[in-house]
Structures are given as C-alpha cells and as structure tokens.
Image 1 (cartoon, helix red, strand yellow):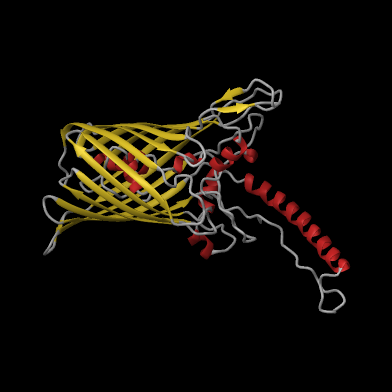
Image 2 (cartoon, rainbow, N blue to C red):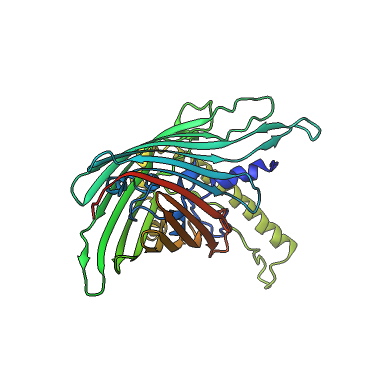
Length: 426
C-alpha cells in the first residue's frame, strides 16, 4: 500500500516510546530518541513475555536482549528469522524483520551476528497533485556482532558492536539530498545461572541478567550540521531482570520472570504546553465573562505563550548540547520532578512461560509504563512449538491503555533452527 501521509508516519516512528500519547499535564516530559525501532521486540518469544529477555533462558534470539546468554546455549549453532508487522490498522507494508546466527564454538565462548531491518514500504512524493509521483522507500537497519565469554561456571559477560543506518530523510522541493544518517553503538551485558536447588515438590533455578544497550554517539539527520546540536540521542537503555525456573518434573517446567528497563537519555527540561489562564474578574462583580475581562485574560495567555516558547527554545538548545556520554550519567538524576519522576522513567514487565517436554511452550506477560512517560500498558500471549531442530513461536498483544499501541492486534512470528553438538551446562 502506497502512503501519502509521510509526516504522520515518521512522527509515529520518532515517538514510539510515547506511543502517540496525548498527555494534558503541563510538565509532561516523555523522552524521545532517534532510531526507536531498536527498542521494538523483534522475536515472538520475547514479545509473548511482554518484551523481556535479559534474564530468560538462552535462545537463538538472545542477541537483542542479552548476548551473554549465548555462552550457556545448549545447541552449538542456531539461525533465526522473525517478522513483525507494524501499524497494521493503518497500512500493510510497514514491518520489522530480523535474522540472527550464533555459534558456541567451545565450552566457554560464543559469537553471534544479526541484522534488523525496519521497512516503511513505498511512499509517493508529489510537488503538485498532477505530478508523476516519486517513489521512495524509507528504511532503517542495524547490523550487530557480539562475543560472549564464561567468566565462571555460573556467570558470563558479553560485548556487542552495532552499526546503525537510518534512511528516513525525504527529498523536498528542489533538494535531492537524502543521505542516510548513521551511527554506531555498543552493548555490555552479563548473565548468571544458579545451581539447581531441590525442594520437596520441585526443583528450582535462579537466573539474573543485565544489559547496557545502544551506547553510542548521537545520530544526525541533518547532513549539513557539523555538531551534535541538531542530532538525536540513540535509545541507550539499561535492562535488569530476574527469573526463576520451577522444574516440576522431567516433562514440565514453569518460569516466572520480571524485568526493569530505563532509557539512559537525559530527561527533557522544557514544558510541552504554556500555562493556561482562566478569565479574570476585574471589577469584582462575580462575572468573568465581560468582554474587557476576557480580553485581559487572552492578552495574559498570549504573553504566557510567548514566554513559554522562549523558555522552551532556550532549554531545548541547552538539552541538545548534552553529549551522549554525559547524557548516560545524568539520566539517573536529572528529572525535574526529582526521585519520584526518576522512578516513573522505569518500565517493568512480568512474564511466565510454561514448557512441556521442551517441545510446547505457552507464555503470558504484562508490560507497564508510567502514564506521564509514554503510557504503554499491554498484555501479551505467546506460544511455541519445537520439532527436531525447528522451532516456531507466535505472539499477540492486547493493549490495556487508552493510548493506541502501534503493535496492537498484531500477530508476530519467529522461526529458529538449532543444530550441531549439544552442551549440558545445567
């Protein structure tokens, strides 16, 4: 499907964290970044657990969530492919795809490579209604490589490098300059697997994980800019999680997991809307609808609009001068609302997975984000089936918020192949 409303679609992409939130509070500070597709769950297993994977059991899709898990992979090699439709209520040719290959080449080490591609389909551009359309195909991609190493029998760490390319720039007027923006980022992750503990009715195992993701220079869509003042922060974020396996017997296992995430990006300091002014009662007659009084209120309102716009322009300029390294450190304590607002910048997800004979899986999850930081709330369902070396996963999302979710009512698919020798770490 060809799209005409390019501005609307690009605005949707650049504000994925806000999820098109309409927030009426004067001091709402939703954090937005460049290339937000990096935060979208690309595989159906993680999506079925409400976008979590930093502390779940290793799988072939661990590259996006925690590459350190590859050091505990039970299969020597694996290859994956996934497909996620996007904005399905509006169009039918926007999607996110991912392919991953990993290789645990010895008992202690593993490497992986992956490609994520976000395509916006075809868009028609015209200067005039009767012009022959110019067809453009905006897209974004990320090419990753990671290395994982066991530092002990129970703990591993990994580093990952990422090349990011964003071709969203649209030619306008006489200009044909649509050079893609690019940047690079690194991840640092860790993963812990506890020993299996015996209880009266079941055995249990603890899992812990963390990942500092997408840490790198800002991405600049303005080809003529020579500094970071017009660039966008990458969606650097911290994920920490914990999970516990309830091993009921040789055939049945239930896992409960929880994950917290926070963007490592400075909080905007400017107001979104100017202060509104109610009509005033100038003469004290109890009626504030007199024309003179209404005019006075309007004049005061216009004055406040001008002052707010000037203040916003100044604070935005200061915000844009923050470099990405300083932004990571300041993101833990820069919220104007103090510690309370900092806590609201954390999202959390809770998920459970039931596994039967390592062949059938059923998943349920819940995701929550503060109403003043994006208002994403949704439930997720998922299922998986494994036969020999082939595994198929599907997931579905139900929004629990009044805010429209771009992935609402979307069925996601993942396919993975695991082959080679087996490892038995636990």
